[in-house]
Length: 61
Image (cartoon, rainbow, N blue to C red; front, side, top):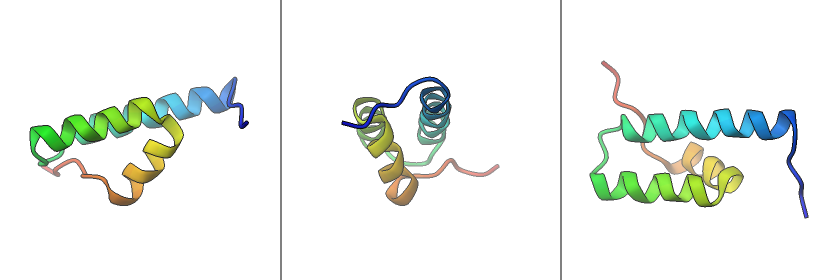
């Protein structure tokens, strides 16, 4: 099993926080925001990668 610790874990935590902030700032519906945040929280690495490819983005402006 892949073990993430130390600096890698810190980087993953920062990326997940950035993803969650971006999800909350997006124009997606509340239900979709909740599902995306849960995905990122439950599966930190995989959830971040899936969000990066398919997830909602923060609205600009």
